[in-house]
Length: 314
Image (cartoon, rainbow, N blue to C red; front, side):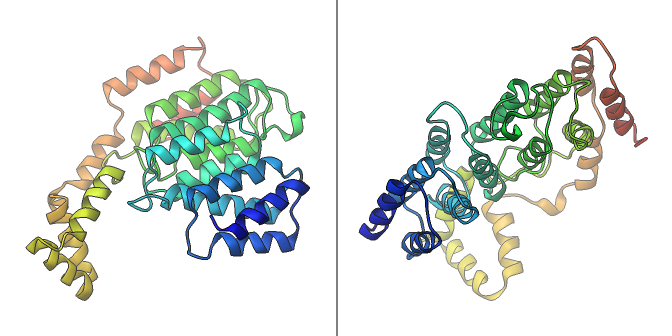
């Protein structure tokens, strides 16, 4: 961290506010080398804790800088490390709760930008939202004006973005744990004044879990690291060949990397067949669905909407 950045951060913390000029100075001090280092990331979080009336400009900078640090702060870039995920969770809940919508937005934005992220990060985000729905307290609660046991539009948007984010074990797909969370929220909020987006989110989310294609697995951070090491290895003949191909023909390079480095023959896969099989609700999935429906001893309107969706009637 530069001395200039440290001095600016200290002055802003002392005032409890940040001016437009100070914001511009912080941006210039934080980005001279195009990266955010750990000391700067920690200082930015401390500033956020101490600014009593954050401006839109500050919130944008806070999110942008910490997404860059969390997602691209370690190699391979684009893959959130276990250490960075743990640091982010610990920093956000240092006082026992997520303190603002800005912090929630930061968490969700990390998941959206990352190619992969530890499961613990997505679980943490969804736990915060579920807790707020059930308790009626938290940054999505419109200053406490909404009763607990109902789902707000802000919560629907955050849930949708989180469960369909790229940084997870099922990119753009809903996992079993996430589908069960949707069912818990559904049962806890039946008959409440929920946001109009909620029924569609519930049906699409659970329906995606049951009928979504499982073949599009994301590249894990470990595999990405192996590939990066492989491509940087100039000692092997194949590494030199692929490097030359990368300079001359991007399409051939991508195909070679896929077939040689990953060891896959994607062209031989029956993609349509895989998708069709995953689309069909199998016996195990049907048993799971029956258990979810039976949990509250009633077939409610959202259950019925889900069943129509699965039958292709909606």
